[in-house]
Amino acid sequence: MATARPTTPEAPHGNIMDIRGLKPEKAYKNMEFMNSAGARHIRIMCEYQQPWDILQRENVKGTLLFFGSARSKTQSEWDAEKKTVDEAMANATSDDDLSKGKMKLDRLMKGKWLIPWHEKVRILSKKLTEWCLVHMPSEESGTSTVVVCTGGGPGMMEAANQGAFQAGPKAKSMGMGISLPFEPRLNTFVRPDALGFEFHYFFTRKFWMVYNCKGLIVAPGGVGTCDELFEVMTLLQTGKISKQASFPIVLLCKEFWQTVVNWAALVKYGTISQHDVDRLHFVDSIDDAFAIITSHLQLATVKGVPLLSPKSPKFKAITPPTPTKTTSIDILKL
Image 1 (cartoon, one colour):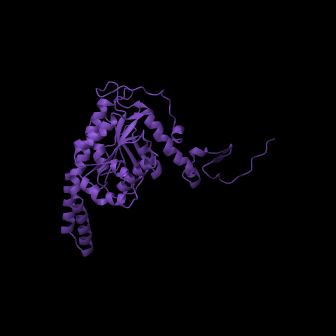
Image 2: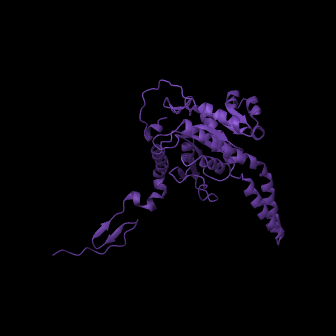
Image 3: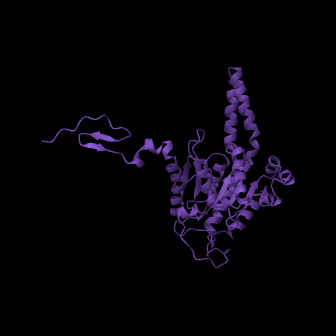
C-alpha cells in the first residue's frame, strides 16, 4: 500500500506544488530571477541580440543618425506652452507659484531660437529619407536599406522621426529609446513596424545607435547631445570605427557649435589634433547638410558591398569581395 506524501511548505520562487508533486518553473520564465542582479548579464545580452535579429529581418543595412535637444518645439507647441504659462502666472495665488511661472517662462524664452532648427531637422530628415528610398531601395521589404534613426524622444529627435515618417508609407522611422521617468514612451512618429526599441542600459543603446551609422547629423543640444557627439568622435579617433566604416559628422548651426565648444583652443593646447576638427562639417544650410550626407552614401559599403542600388543612376560598379554571412557573434569580434 502506497504511503501518502508528507505535507510540505508552499513552494517558493514561482514553483508550483500540489498533490501530484513539484512543478518547478523554467528559469527564463521566472521574472523574479530574470529581473534580479544575478541575471543582469542575460538582460544585457537580450538588449544586444534582439535588435540584431530585428534589423536583420527588416533588412536595415545602415542608418542616418540624428542627435539633438529634447527641449526643442514646433512653433505651435511653443505658442501653446507660452499661453499656458502666461495664464498660470496671471492666476498665481502665491509668490511661490509666481516664481515657478517665471522660471518656466525664462526657460521657454531661452529655447525659442530652436524653433527654426526643429523645422530644419524635420525637412532634412524627410529629404534624406526620400533620397534613400530612390537610391537605396530594399527589394525584400519594399522600403529602404538605409533609414533615419533617433533616440526616440521628443524635440529634435521627434522632428527627425516626423520627417522620415512624412516621406511616405514605404519609409521607415526608427527610434532607439531609453527607459526614463520623463520620457515614458517613444514619440508618435516612430513607425509601429518593429523599428521601435526601448533599452534599459545606455551602453547597449549607444552600441546599436552607432553600429550601423552611415551619417551623423547633430542639431543643437545639451549634455546628452554633447555626450553622444564626443563619444562618436572618440570612437573615430581611436579607430574603433574603422576607416572603411567611418561616416561624416554634420553639426547644424555653426554659431552654436563654434560657441559652446572652443575647438581652436582644444587644438591649441594639444588635447586634440586639427584632423579631429577637420572631420566635422559645420553647416547652417539644409542643402549643404544634404549634399554632405548623400555624397558619402554614394560611396558607403557594408563589407565591401555598395549600399547604393545598381539601379540607381548614381551607381558605379566596383568589384566587391566575396560576401560572407555576418552573425551577431561576429559583431563582438569587431
